[in-house]
Length: 198
Image (cartoon, rainbow, N blue to C red; front, side, top):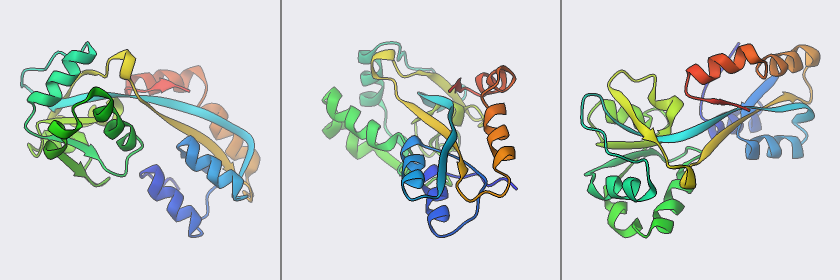
């Protein structure tokens, strides 16, 4: 059985007692599970890195965000910007606005989204003009397009790390799943979905 969701939500479920054999979450969540004795350090591996990008509605003119200044101007000119409040990139995005010196101008335009309504979905539905999220989170929405990745100097990667439950009754099979997800065959699929291997 596979359960999908935001890392923070899945970790909360595990903390409440949800059983698992393999968990793929953020490194911080995995560290906490390991510290609490719920996950084993053996077999732990980084599976994928999700670079962040800018989502725009399909068919509209894409802003040039190839430079930090271009990205900054895109945010300043936008009427509304969606991001997922509970997402791994939310704290980084908010701190980036401060770093760029545009927090006060951009903050009123921000449209925080729940994990059930990702930023790219909000853009595709016309609820926001731009969306800041992982590129892999933009690709599934036919009504949204990737304007581009964040410039290299300010790029953020959401890392997905795999770990085996400390009490798993199928520990070797669980470790085999993690090993498979780090193979070249899996890497090809990850790349096609907008992710970078481990």
